[in-house]
Image 1 (cartoon, rainbow, N blue to C red):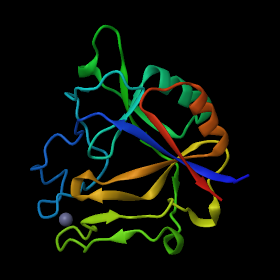
Image 2: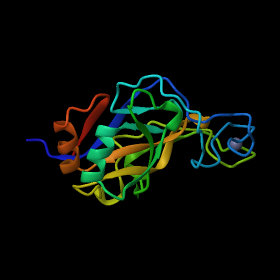
Image 3: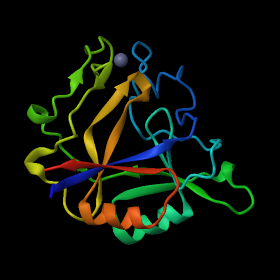
Length: 188
Ligand SMILES: [Zn+2]
């Protein structure tokens, strides 16, 4: 039987962008468009696809339903910050933007991500792609918990981290019947 090392966790595409203004030089580099920080506020954000428990914006932010948030608080407490989307509240249905705090370093030699050129202005890679199975250093995804890669993948302002779930946590999530959740196993 194949041993599973960890799972890569994906939220369904929610057809939205969290970054409110790409032309704001304080948020995004004017040359390559990379986000200068992930601490971006967007109090007017409205979620287009409200039926998912777990979804992702095109620019690498995760959105959770109340069901997913409650489950996360049980299986991976203290691993994320949640910001409620107040402008999005309708019919009592609430959603939150999540930011994952527990970062695992990618094993660059094994994962072999492809780095685009560095931007002359902000020094960031203009794109990062192509990692293999998101191997982390020392195969160190703990059995329990939810983590993000230190590297962010994608092009320009769409770059975002990859989410990794430990095996036990992934099983709990899979059993919950969450809409929008995909778990890709990574074999040991
Ligand atoms: Zn730049």
